[in-house]
Length: 287
Image (tube, one colour):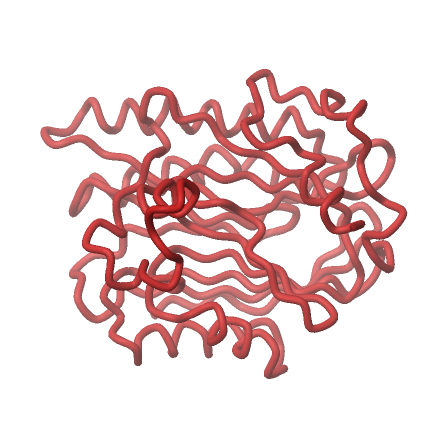
């Protein structure tokens, strides 16, 4: 098990506490997951390709975000540029192997947008971002997976995903053609707890178990360690990576009154078509 020390950080006036941990699991011989949990970047990449190729692919994704680390006013365009570079780098890794390679990418970057700190959430693949605040637990990202597509069209129940034979098939990956990232923009809220994880966690623990783990208290590092241990106890059939972030101070008090209007959907220059508008989550939260 690799543990990264609990850390407190200030970025753009926001005080954060973060803990993270990754583990090879109980069935795999190599850890193809990589993570970066250093303000203002909190991302997980789950490599695919077997042995060294998967490790190289996920590490390549993380490397492209290192230039954002330590900065206090990251523009959204820099995050999008890092995603685009990561696509190209993973594609090069894939081309250099006999069987190909790829990676997921998911997480949050604390950015400066319209003179205020915001979370820019990015997702490619089936790693996930969750949020807990005021007892409300949500998955903020939407999986790019065959299972999710079948759920969306009504031919698979979410309750049946655990036994679905092709539950690990993803429909987008870093380095693959036509695999655009989804982006969401949402306010930073004081008191919220956020979780970024690979499917080694979400594939072993139910949403109810994950929520319970986030609710039990303890520091972010203690929580990350406990969630990872739970995944291992449940079978640990895949590599597991976990990042837990607490917003200590500096955010708004709630989403209400902070919704992003439809006419602002293009104010973040992603230089690509957002398949899920950045204002979607904030608008829904204000209902």
